[in-house]
Image (cartoon, rainbow, N blue to C red; front, side):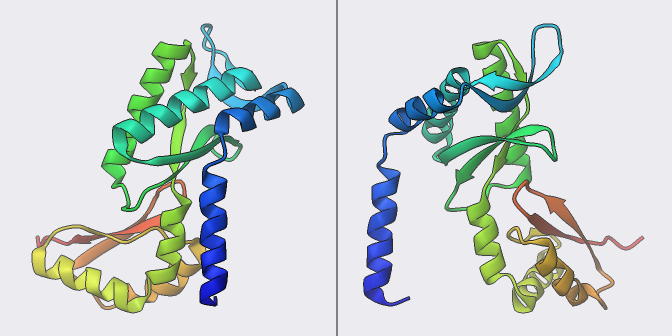
Length: 200
């Protein structure tokens, strides 16, 4: 992309990010009274719809909580039919490891339960990391991770990548007998976990 086009695009992105979310959701509430949102009520019944006004309150609450506590940008929340959960779309400059991601999700679910009296399943999805992974992960990238794993004997993790890209790169692991590897779901693509195989 030419420099002037890139500058124009960057300026547009900054403008869009400055849009007042509260005004947007107020407009959206008038257009759509009920939205899909998975949660359990006091009777432990699974409900798949929620008033848009409450959903907006939950989103704004989550946005403030996550951005201030973890320095993570929050953009949207949406019901995911495949997992029957609510995806919170985020952006981090550095990928969050799986352990920390799970801890943050559990904390969010607990806080929402106490604050809104409902049981939810919130899942963090960072498609920015998937975009980065699809851009930089290649055979050389994975071979470097394998080399680091064999040298340090410590587990290595790739950036998340799409299914098509993973299937093309699996051949890199053929011939290595001292490592094990597997794909781990991150809600936005899968990472490849590479571990040192201890000799028995």
